[in-house]
Image: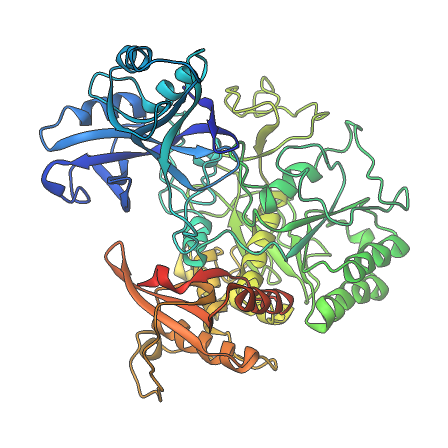
Length: 624
């Protein structure tokens, strides 16, 4: 069963199995986190189950592995974990089913229905309303509920499902079907459906950054992708389009269906493909997508494309195009058009402009990428080495994972006719093995550039006050030095720039630079980060009643100190810190305000949203 539609409440839920998580109940409440068959423990208790990722071979199905674990002496029960289509909250069936029989059915008839599915009667609430539970001989409770919903005796059958309510602080990895193929986000050292070996850890640390954030970035950040060939019907793009513009038609109508132009679709998906339960995920899945269609060498067009980005509020601008032809060097006016975006975008803080250095295997980069204000992105491979096609030069800012060994998986325009891979035999996939009709293998600095653009969006998600210059500094400061140390002179390599981008370190640095505004940023040293040093506190015990706005949960104490000071100054309300433990580590949950009414907290939430601070309403009772 991959999908199942069941009645729930007043509507229906379309459920699908998790591809990696299961729920296990142990005998005598044994902690399963250190069991040999558990790769990772995710949740301590959900419907009495411990939610874990099993340690299994790549070729071993989750169903077979779960059946094997169920037979172990210490295991009482095992279940699959489910998700509602389009949601990231895990659901676990408790085993109970709430059943309303049709008027006029006798208790004998009702018992026959229960017996058919080997159900035990738990509670009779009235003559037609009962609660039953599956037994060891029953089918899956979801299947039982679904089957009972189809019978004439039953008016309503709803399986009891448990999930975390407002569990925003616990990041849940996206369940998109091709995520395991996206080694550039997290490299496990192999391709899931191939024998091709990769280098474990040779990635951009994007999933680590999401875990640090507790989410996948802000919905308020806008990434403009300037390119051609945007398929606006692509499932990973269609629901996030924001202020599109076509330079060729001088309108919001983006030209499509021309087989000569397909490049924009994969570039955009690498940066910001939505997390929607299928396909791939971009580096910043929550970001808005501003397609600017119509690349051009024209001075007028260059000014227009960047001015549109300024006027329409682009936070990050990704450009996977340029030229290394000396005949078409940049004029001072074109340089000024780009500089204007970096200087005047984002209401004066500057739009972050990323340019691909080019794929010509030259010792100088594209003239656009050589602009001193942009982030010039080179490419590395899944083996964590320089991609030989990637241009080199002193202007290279940073490098990011792309092809050269094993390709990137990206979105494909519906009219894309494909290109040959090596032998020319395959159109979309290097090995000829399809991973989906709307996707393909992709690469080049064209892929590395939007990956960095997406990471810039994550940086701005946690610290939107950063200037374009500061974002560039953060990327360079937090990059991982790969390759030979001898290739770096004063911290810079002509191949790698400052090193391979590290999204997790970059996000951590952006958090450390948070302060009360004004353009100055606090550098937090290791001692402060660990909570060491002298600080002045005014500690008051807070009753666990009322409402506030939770902005997140932090593992580093230094981030808590900075957040508390910033939030108190900006919103002039008390800031609460709940100290707790999650998965064996101390977690600090920061809540703004303590109101007796939910409506007062909601008013503060709206004020915070207008100020660009993300959060959610929190019942303080839940923090007991």
